Amino acid sequence: EDQVTQSPEALRLQEGESSSLNCSYTVSGLRGLFWYRQDPGKGPEFLFTLYSAGEEKEKERLKATLTKKESFLHITAPKPEDSATYLCAARLDSTGGFKTIFGAGTRLFVKA
Amino acid sequence: NAGVMQNPRHLVRRRGQEARLRCSPVKGHSHVYWYRQLPEEGLKFMVYLQKENIIDESGMPKERFSAEFPKEGPSILRIQQVVRGDSAAYFCASSSSGPYSYNSPLHFGNGTRLTVT
Image (cartoon, each protein chain N blue to C red):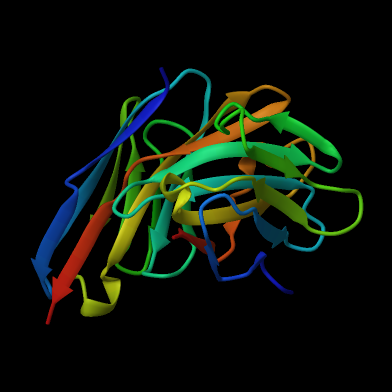
Protein backbone atom coordinates (compact mmCIF):
# COMPACT_ATOMS: atom_id res chain seq x y z
CA GLU A 1 0.00 0.00 0.00
CA ASP A 2 1.27 3.47 -0.87
CA GLN A 3 2.23 5.31 2.28
CA VAL A 4 3.86 8.53 3.46
CA THR A 5 5.07 8.77 7.06
CA GLN A 6 6.36 11.91 8.76
CA SER A 7 8.38 12.26 11.96
CA PRO A 8 8.41 13.62 14.52
CA GLU A 9 4.72 14.38 15.04
CA ALA A 10 5.66 17.57 16.87
CA LEU A 11 8.90 19.48 17.29
CA ARG A 12 9.61 22.29 19.71
CA LEU A 13 12.65 24.48 19.00
CA GLN A 14 14.16 27.59 20.44
CA GLU A 15 14.63 30.45 18.02
CA GLY A 16 17.90 29.84 16.16
CA GLU A 17 18.01 26.10 16.94
CA SER A 18 18.37 24.28 13.61
CA SER A 19 16.74 20.87 13.03
CA SER A 20 15.30 18.53 10.40
CA LEU A 21 11.90 17.03 9.66
CA ASN A 22 11.69 13.57 8.12
CA CYS A 23 9.36 12.17 5.47
CA SER A 24 9.65 8.52 4.48
CA TYR A 25 7.63 7.12 1.62
CA THR A 26 6.69 3.75 0.23
CA VAL A 27 4.99 4.29 -3.09
CA SER A 28 5.05 2.82 -6.56
CA GLY A 29 5.48 5.11 -9.51
CA LEU A 30 6.62 8.23 -7.63
CA ARG A 31 6.22 11.30 -9.81
CA GLY A 32 7.31 13.90 -7.32
CA LEU A 33 7.72 14.66 -3.62
CA PHE A 34 6.10 17.86 -2.36
CA TRP A 35 6.44 19.90 0.82
CA TYR A 36 3.68 22.19 2.05
CA ARG A 37 3.26 24.51 5.00
CA GLN A 38 -0.12 24.76 6.75
CA ASP A 39 -1.07 27.47 9.22
CA PRO A 40 -4.03 27.01 11.59
CA GLY A 41 -7.36 27.54 9.86
CA LYS A 42 -5.75 27.75 6.42
CA GLY A 43 -5.16 25.47 3.48
CA PRO A 44 -1.69 24.06 2.76
CA GLU A 45 0.71 26.37 0.96
CA PHE A 46 3.19 24.93 -1.54
CA LEU A 47 6.90 25.10 -0.65
CA PHE A 48 8.96 22.68 -2.79
CA THR A 49 8.83 19.92 -5.36
CA LEU A 50 11.60 17.30 -5.63
CA TYR A 51 11.76 14.75 -8.44
CA SER A 52 14.92 12.67 -8.16
CA ALA A 53 17.26 11.34 -5.50
CA GLY A 54 20.02 13.79 -4.71
CA GLU A 55 17.95 16.82 -5.60
CA GLU A 56 17.89 19.80 -3.21
CA LYS A 57 15.76 22.95 -3.11
CA GLU A 58 16.18 26.00 -0.85
CA LYS A 59 13.96 28.88 0.19
CA GLU A 60 15.02 31.29 2.91
CA ARG A 61 15.66 29.18 6.06
CA LEU A 62 14.29 25.98 4.53
CA LYS A 63 16.09 23.34 2.49
CA ALA A 64 14.47 20.17 1.18
CA THR A 65 16.42 17.08 0.12
CA LEU A 66 15.40 13.77 -1.41
CA THR A 67 16.76 10.22 -1.32
CA LYS A 68 15.22 7.06 -2.79
CA LYS A 69 13.19 6.43 0.36
CA GLU A 70 13.12 9.68 2.33
CA SER A 71 12.94 13.42 2.16
CA PHE A 72 14.18 15.87 4.74
CA LEU A 73 13.16 19.43 5.42
CA HIS A 74 16.04 21.21 7.10
CA ILE A 75 15.27 24.38 9.03
CA THR A 76 18.25 26.63 9.71
CA ALA A 77 18.09 29.19 12.54
CA PRO A 78 14.27 29.11 12.72
CA LYS A 79 12.18 32.08 13.79
CA PRO A 80 8.81 32.08 15.59
CA GLU A 81 7.07 32.84 12.29
CA ASP A 82 8.24 29.45 11.01
CA SER A 83 5.82 27.82 13.46
CA ALA A 84 3.32 25.81 11.41
CA THR A 85 2.49 22.27 10.35
CA TYR A 86 4.72 20.98 7.58
CA LEU A 87 3.18 18.41 5.26
CA CYS A 88 4.97 16.03 2.95
CA ALA A 89 3.15 14.55 -0.05
CA ALA A 90 3.95 11.99 -2.74
CA ARG A 91 2.52 12.27 -6.22
CA LEU A 92 2.02 8.98 -8.01
CA ASP A 93 0.35 7.61 -11.08
CA SER A 94 -3.33 6.88 -10.75
CA THR A 95 -6.29 6.00 -12.91
CA GLY A 96 -6.63 8.64 -15.59
CA GLY A 97 -3.81 10.82 -14.31
CA PHE A 98 -2.13 11.06 -10.95
CA LYS A 99 -2.99 11.54 -7.30
CA THR A 100 -1.21 13.02 -4.29
CA ILE A 101 -1.12 11.34 -0.89
CA PHE A 102 -0.10 13.20 2.25
CA GLY A 103 1.68 12.38 5.46
CA ALA A 104 0.12 13.37 8.79
CA GLY A 105 2.47 16.33 9.14
CA THR A 106 4.98 17.64 11.67
CA ARG A 107 3.80 20.45 13.94
CA LEU A 108 6.68 22.84 14.47
CA PHE A 109 6.72 25.28 17.39
CA VAL A 110 9.51 27.85 17.51
CA LYS A 111 9.84 29.79 20.74
CA ALA A 112 11.42 33.24 20.87
CA ASN B 1 -5.38 36.10 -10.00
CA ALA B 2 -7.75 34.56 -7.50
CA GLY B 3 -6.75 31.33 -5.81
CA VAL B 4 -9.00 28.42 -4.96
CA MET B 5 -12.22 29.67 -3.38
CA GLN B 6 -14.23 27.47 -1.08
CA ASN B 7 -17.55 28.26 0.53
CA PRO B 8 -18.93 28.28 3.03
CA ARG B 9 -15.98 28.52 5.43
CA HIS B 10 -18.05 27.04 8.23
CA LEU B 11 -21.13 24.84 7.91
CA VAL B 12 -23.25 23.47 10.72
CA ARG B 13 -25.73 20.70 9.98
CA ARG B 14 -27.94 18.52 12.15
CA ARG B 15 -27.72 14.76 11.78
CA GLY B 16 -29.68 13.61 8.74
CA GLN B 17 -29.41 16.88 6.80
CA GLU B 18 -27.50 17.42 3.58
CA ALA B 19 -24.22 19.33 3.30
CA ARG B 20 -23.12 20.97 0.04
CA LEU B 21 -19.56 22.23 -0.19
CA ARG B 22 -18.48 24.40 -3.10
CA CYS B 23 -15.09 24.91 -4.71
CA SER B 24 -14.05 27.27 -7.49
CA PRO B 25 -10.58 26.30 -8.78
CA VAL B 26 -7.83 28.64 -9.89
CA LYS B 27 -8.85 30.16 -13.22
CA GLY B 28 -7.68 27.89 -16.01
CA HIS B 29 -7.25 24.82 -13.81
CA SER B 30 -9.26 21.82 -14.92
CA HIS B 31 -8.17 19.29 -12.29
CA VAL B 32 -9.92 19.38 -8.91
CA TYR B 33 -9.24 17.28 -5.83
CA TRP B 34 -11.15 16.98 -2.57
CA TYR B 35 -9.45 16.08 0.68
CA ARG B 36 -10.71 15.59 4.22
CA GLN B 37 -8.72 16.50 7.31
CA LEU B 38 -9.42 15.54 10.91
CA PRO B 39 -7.70 17.37 13.80
CA GLU B 40 -3.99 16.47 14.01
CA GLU B 41 -4.31 14.13 11.03
CA GLY B 42 -3.08 14.47 7.50
CA LEU B 43 -5.10 15.16 4.42
CA LYS B 44 -6.99 12.11 3.20
CA PHE B 45 -7.66 11.91 -0.51
CA MET B 46 -11.33 11.60 -1.43
CA VAL B 47 -11.89 12.24 -5.11
CA TYR B 48 -10.19 13.58 -8.25
CA LEU B 49 -12.27 15.22 -10.98
CA GLN B 50 -11.72 16.81 -14.32
CA LYS B 51 -14.39 18.85 -16.06
CA GLU B 52 -17.58 16.76 -16.20
CA ASN B 53 -15.74 13.57 -15.25
CA ILE B 54 -14.89 11.72 -12.06
CA ILE B 55 -11.42 10.30 -12.61
CA ASP B 56 -10.66 8.64 -9.26
CA GLU B 57 -13.14 8.33 -6.38
CA SER B 58 -11.30 5.60 -4.52
CA GLY B 59 -11.06 7.65 -1.31
CA MET B 60 -14.71 8.61 -1.14
CA PRO B 61 -17.26 6.53 0.81
CA LYS B 62 -19.63 4.86 -1.63
CA GLU B 63 -22.73 5.82 0.31
CA ARG B 64 -23.97 9.33 1.07
CA PHE B 65 -21.01 11.09 -0.63
CA SER B 66 -20.96 12.40 -4.18
CA ALA B 67 -18.92 14.91 -6.15
CA GLU B 68 -19.28 16.73 -9.42
CA PHE B 69 -17.38 19.27 -11.48
CA PRO B 70 -19.75 20.55 -14.17
CA LYS B 71 -18.78 22.25 -17.38
CA GLU B 72 -19.88 25.56 -15.91
CA GLY B 73 -19.72 26.50 -12.26
CA PRO B 74 -17.91 25.25 -9.18
CA SER B 75 -17.14 21.73 -8.08
CA ILE B 76 -19.58 20.43 -5.48
CA LEU B 77 -19.00 17.86 -2.75
CA ARG B 78 -22.33 16.64 -1.43
CA ILE B 79 -22.85 14.68 1.76
CA GLN B 80 -26.34 13.32 2.29
CA GLN B 81 -27.83 12.35 5.65
CA VAL B 82 -24.80 13.62 7.57
CA VAL B 83 -23.63 11.88 10.73
CA ARG B 84 -21.40 13.15 13.55
CA GLY B 85 -18.42 11.28 12.06
CA ASP B 86 -18.60 13.50 8.98
CA SER B 87 -17.44 16.49 11.06
CA ALA B 88 -14.09 17.53 9.62
CA ALA B 89 -12.36 20.14 7.47
CA TYR B 90 -12.84 19.53 3.76
CA PHE B 91 -10.22 20.99 1.45
CA CYS B 92 -10.41 21.48 -2.27
CA ALA B 93 -7.31 21.77 -4.44
CA SER B 94 -6.74 22.42 -8.11
CA SER B 95 -3.90 21.99 -10.57
CA SER B 96 -3.24 22.94 -14.13
CA SER B 97 -3.78 20.63 -17.08
CA GLY B 98 -1.38 19.63 -19.82
CA PRO B 99 1.02 16.81 -20.65
CA TYR B 100 3.34 17.75 -17.79
CA SER B 101 0.63 18.46 -15.26
CA TYR B 102 2.15 16.01 -12.80
CA ASN B 103 4.77 18.71 -12.27
CA SER B 104 2.33 21.27 -11.05
CA PRO B 105 1.70 21.60 -7.32
CA LEU B 106 -1.76 21.55 -5.83
CA HIS B 107 -3.24 24.92 -4.96
CA PHE B 108 -5.50 24.68 -1.93
CA GLY B 109 -8.45 26.65 -0.71
CA ASN B 110 -8.87 27.48 2.97
CA GLY B 111 -11.36 24.70 3.50
CA THR B 112 -14.90 24.25 4.74
CA ARG B 113 -15.25 23.22 8.36
CA LEU B 114 -18.29 21.00 8.70
CA THR B 115 -19.78 20.47 12.13
CA VAL B 116 -22.59 17.94 12.54
CA THR B 117 -24.66 18.38 15.69
